[in-house]
Amino acid sequence: MNETCKESNPKDKIGSKKAPMSTLPAGVLAEIGVAMMEGKAKYGAFNYRIAGIRSSVYYDALMRHIMAWWEGEDIDPASGLPHVVKALSTLVVLRDAQRNGMVNDDRPPISPIDYDDLNAKTAAIIEMHKDKSPRQYTRDDPVVPLEERTNGTN
Image 1 (tube, rainbow, N blue to C red):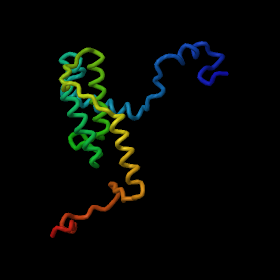
Image 2: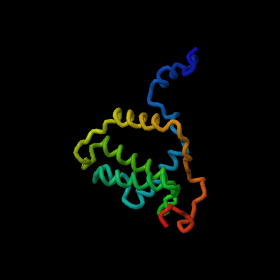
Image 3: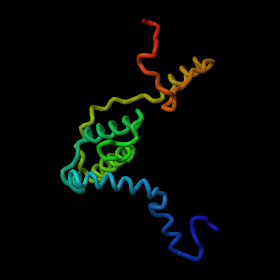
């Protein structure tokens, strides 16, 4: 028997071939809902479907949130929501605007990135230094105050 279908229910054969909603994490969707409600309170619900958006504005917002998260600030102080959730909601608006033809695409002219070449260079650098084992620091490491650091140039 097919694990995705229950033989006693003919709807399973049809329903299991439709866009799955059961693969979406409900908690994350609920957090995105709160972030989208913040946008509704600030700008009006679905304003981006009527007024449209500029790609650069959403790219900038996305990068600010994801860089803040990357640098260790988990929560956006302005909203109290996780930066990752704010980044996701930014992408949700961007994608919805794309789907509805409401994006002013002000991205710069195309400048292809040759990832195959960059990946080969990365592999070569790793290979070149494979005999070394430098310490990789993370946010769990203690921060040494600036006045206690020495760099040999006193």
